[in-house]
Image 1 (tube, rainbow, N blue to C red):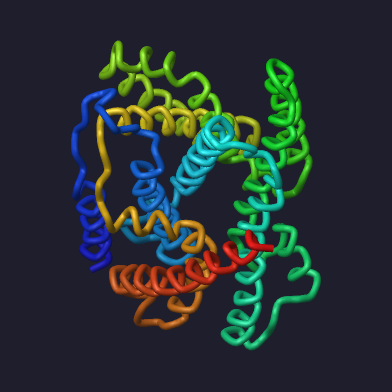
Image 2: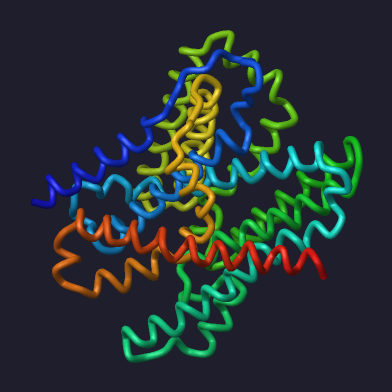
Amino acid sequence: MHLLESAGIILLLLMTILFGVKKVPYNSTGFDCMSLDNTMPIRGILAIIVLLHHLSSYYLEFSFISPFKHVGYIAVALFFFLSGYGLSWGYQHKQNYLKNFLIKHILRLYIPYLICVGVYVVSIGIINRSFPTLSDILLSLIFLGQTNPVGWYVGELILFYIVFYISFSFTGKKRIIVFSILYCLLIVGLLLTPVKDIWTKSIIGFPMGMILYFKRQQIDRLILKKYILSIIVSFCIFALGVLVKILGEIHVVFSVKLCGNTISCLGSIIVLYCILLKLRFGNKFLRFFGSLSYEIYLYHVLLLTILISNSFIKEHSLVCFCLVLTSTILISYVVHKINVLSTSFLKRL
């Protein structure tokens, strides 16, 4: 029964992704493959993958969707990749982009996260009849506690924002040097912490987004000159990374595992960009889902925890997936509207 239900999930996901996809010639008038309009559906796809990753990792480990257990870090790397590209684009196209940059961008992330931590504390306390400890709540406020297991993503994104802001306060080659130094220091700092395994898995994504933006013409020429070969090579890079990662896990060698994570993320980023160069994603559902991706990321694990406490739902993966997806969309939509209102209010202050 699990096999049929899980196959249904994968089929539904594929149909959703492929619906509305169109082939577009390179440099087609009015089409930018990395525009927000074309990448928003990608964010929707990545949000679904992260949801399936946690579904298979924590609750349905032996179901047919268990392959999603191993690709969560890649989805996060692609989120970081899109963020790095988006910030670089904003810096080049928006006047006074760095003015109040940290305040605007950090508050936009942290206020919804803070509210989410409060919801987690109350909800988990009611479900377990035992509230998280004060120390764990306080650690969660700085993205280190277990009250919200996806808080690390928010913390790492804020660190990227800080590195970006400091680096782009400089000009010319100094900017590149400062970013390289700060990025290396960030990696070294994370490697010295107990959370190094989680926080360093997808760290390559953000700088790759920046590199793509500033070297896009050269990269486009390189890929389009041998497009099929580029796709094959990128898949080979991905496969090599997965192999190295597996070897690192088998022999319990963190450095090998980290190397594998980095290589596989790099391969995935190249694959995604090759696809975006040729295809336009016009799926309105995925675009809507992508617009809620941050709220989905924050709340889906909580909803999984609540729903999975029911034994019937836990035993039926398709029912669980549909309920989690529906409830996550509803909650995320409401929270998103609140976030938009609060953001517009802060802008008027």
